[in-house]
Length: 454
Ligand code: 13P
Ligand code: SF4
Image (cartoon, rainbow, N blue to C red; front, side, top):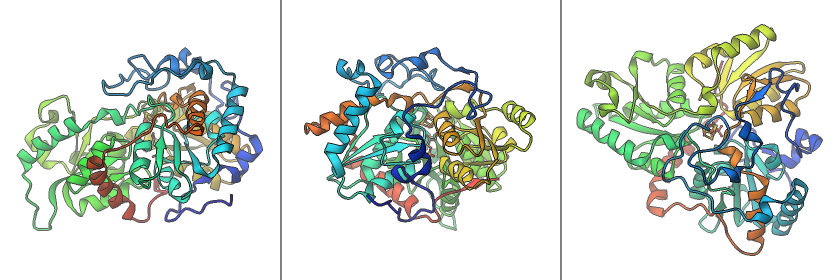
């Protein structure tokens, strides 16, 4: 299969067969956890449960080990039905053989997508690896694929299902792979907020045709929230195009209601020159979001009280320690980090921005990276000519990405081979149609990606 050229993005979507780092290392085993070049400061893990298998957590009322282990799973989070014992008990070698055999048998009818944050034991089977936006579009480049197995989290699979052709099936190997940040805003709470805002601010456009509030949702949100945006003239953004999207939004709205990640919203708005005095955090647990009428009227950006536990772990002190230990180090963080962390870094940008920054650096560069550990380790393994390490010395992967394990992948692939579809992700058309409006508003905006701020 020749490398796939992606249509309208200048970002690098890696087709794994063609990636030199992937060819060279084979990606069979995760990088060592301690004392490695990839993470010079790495000493311990955030949870001893990281050594456990994800199915041990699927029935528990939480997300399991990892950075968001303390985030409660919402009541509606799907629970994985028991993974059959033959998959739970299979050795890594047996699972590897079974996955490769099933994948080969399914041939071009199958495409496996892997998010940058997936563990290497999964990434090795992916036909494409990229960010959530790239992967949603990647499936479209394989027209013969009847089934898209999405090794990522629920909102990504949902987006792929909405953008895929009606005859394509999207599968999430483990239904318990949610996103704790996406779960911090639901349709009821956002509708409640919206009703309070429109009661106060009205619905009349101003002389420039801008509505009082325009909703913008981060890709990391449910299809229901994307639909909400589509129904109210709003739009979706990703971390790679948030600024372009906000500029579009301000041409149509006097204010923006940005959910669920307050940090991406704040960091992006501030990079656009909007002062903090014109931003306010809407706390959905409080009447009127905990804000005064004056604060709501004055705000240009209303930020939902959501956050990513993985990126909240990065601190200004870690950056200072990295600079002290590695003079000349370049610190790059994801814009889901807090504003002081983004300010203290040399650059901030999406996962794709980080990948491209490392790829473009001259040999011998040194990077301290503030994002999920699996991506940082993979970059360190792929670019041994650089020193690359995670800002946080405590190894703490995204606990929901962690839920995708080779046992689940083998399970869904072998079922597929028998003609059985497990863990299919579907979005009812009543939700998908307005959600597509908001997604398509984003897709029309160019240039798409590689936004980052130095
Ligand atoms: P991307 O949009 O870069 O894929 O990131 C998704 C994510 O979950 C970041 O935490
Ligand atoms: Fe969600 Fe954070 Fe994990 Fe990304 S890293 S999937 S935002 S919990």
